[in-house]
Image (tube, rainbow, N blue to C red):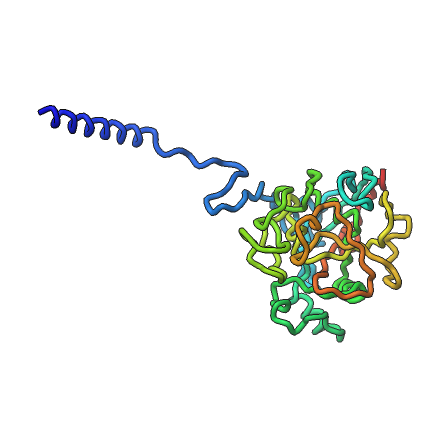
Length: 313
């Protein structure tokens, strides 16, 4: 009898617990930037989507608007002008002194230029192919075109009626409007956010460039600013503070050291920092150097002239 009473008590307690679970429910999964069920890091806020803009839109572009260049098919995102602190006291000596700079609104390539786009160029303009062009690790259509020297990239941009971003423009976008330490979706760095040396998480590309757009965009809606391929800028390597009028934006490629930004799949994550500057002689060819395009509103055929804005503060 006593044993039966104990068993009955256990059953009643189990039933009560079951009712409580049904009423309360399971604990909610934490929201925000914590680990997701797959173990990947949160990717931050989704960039605000703009509209489609063309030179016939009849109005000035707005933040996040996208324009497709008819010559090479590049999708560019409108970056509104603004102020930011360029450089850092925490990094390498040539990253300082930091200074407050102003960037006018401009269009920035949403992705790095791909092999498919470069094929389009080669079909239109008889020109030499990049290094490693026939190697399968580098020549998939959706990978960034790499092993491009400065003059070759200039030839592509001339055909496409586009240009490089200046070093100040690149860093302004990379900072994401939030002075991010790394030009990723969250301002942090990991293999869930960028293709840098090694693998893990979302990054499954070991020693090769990933298809463009494989990682989350930064707050401006720009992909792969951290890692994948180093990106040429238009800027000659000079000491800071940056000034667009001190000769560093001379387009003549001969005999100059140019600045690359962003890091790549071959380099460790520290090279992906927003303020890190890597200089390279414009005639040298490396398998990790690619292209990102830019253009000013006034440079687009049929576009409205850009309103004048102030210079460096």
